[in-house]
Length: 286
Image 1 (cartoon, rainbow, N blue to C red):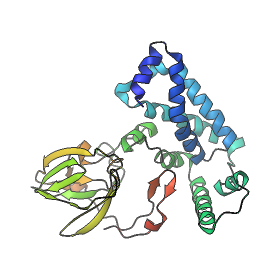
Image 2 (cartoon, rainbow, N blue to C red):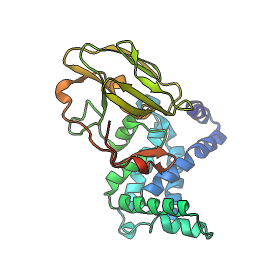
Image 3 (cartoon, rainbow, N blue to C red):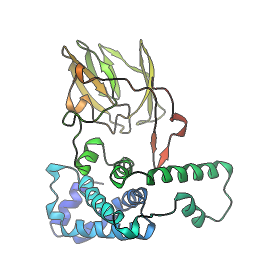
Image 4 (cartoon, rainbow, N blue to C red):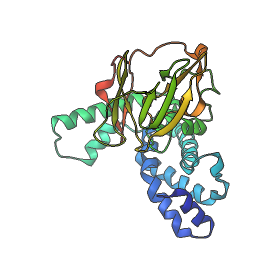
């Protein structure tokens, strides 16, 4: 769906085109508001208010400053935080497990029960976070938003503008190395890092060099491109979630003095579609 074309139609007077925007974003919006800890009734009211404000203020949207999804979820975040800060909403919905029991009275298989319990525990843990931190995590589940978009919504900067935060990236190129990226193939000094391709475009790819092997995810089928010779005192870095990360493809090489440590274990791994890669939690980072 071409969002920009739909917005142009709306601005040209085609009011019916706005319904296409609602259909496109209503499910991601409901999902975000639910992960913020809002009860279903409150989430529906806020979603309606978000679309109403988007309709009234569409003239304020400037595509030069970011995608429409970034603008829309900024509205949703601000309204959700206001709602959560109201005294009547300090005790939010009971939990995912209870909602699932109301929606399905039939006994679930063991695997389903385990998923329900894990989802309940995860939601309970998320509700312990301050609303602002909860917002960052909830936005990470929205497929349309990458790190840069989330940073704009939250009103903060990404590397290299914000040096008060730590960023976990994989060093691909050292000083003097020639890094070339074509589609989903990463080459260092003419040698491809790809060892095994996933069964479908956008899947998991196993990469490796003389130091070992690791897995990365390309969530976009087309991949990206780059052709860089790493300068002295610099390194070339990539995130392992290649379709939703900000790395040297965007901000260039990183000064060696900014490399301050090494990640040891995985504390959280998101599989998309609201699922968590439970088997990866606690794994040693290769």
